[in-house]
Length: 296
Image (cartoon, one colour):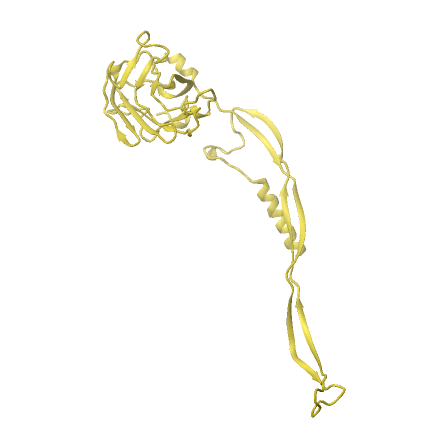
């Protein structure tokens, strides 16, 4: 069975990133947990999608009127079953056919200004926080490939983005959709600037021992309105906190790129399914810390 990471198509698209006079700001994602793209014996092929409103109250963003999945022309409505739709968590009644809310449009059966060929789901969705889930099963198993998704809303059509879906390609056409992977070697370096600093903190004064008292130059007793003089001597200690440290800042990094290859030769075979990364910045900081420990 083909793994999900080898799919020859996208599992998510986002029309909110497409600019224009008006925008249908909705993202569509293939629900891999609920879908059955490669059914086993006794299973039906199933496709599940999540449509999410990502817009705001700006008048350039408009609500969704309906959505169409451009299935391959060789897939008939009789091959589609178990259709479910939920809008904001509320399950919707499915009515198939020309006057229903789910219908399969073929070439010549629609007005090109209002619809397009494919499986149409006639359910509206709010542009800001609407969430809609759509799923359907297929009685036959079809190749998984790029399937265009078209959005309609208030005389506006958003099209051109494709997601994983059932297609009726010929085998040769299907192979063309294989995704190739390339690898690029690179050496990354980043200069570090160390700036020492000293901060002088708030001073504090403490008494050091008892005060010393000395007699004045004249006697005081018995003299009306007289004066008496004495001297106090006190030892003090002053605490002056001083903070000494440094700040390390990174400048723009530089890269030396190696050759491009179709295989990742730098990763051992036993680790080919893991991403190996090493932080040059982290090693540099560790070297700086070691330097200060040895020299302070």
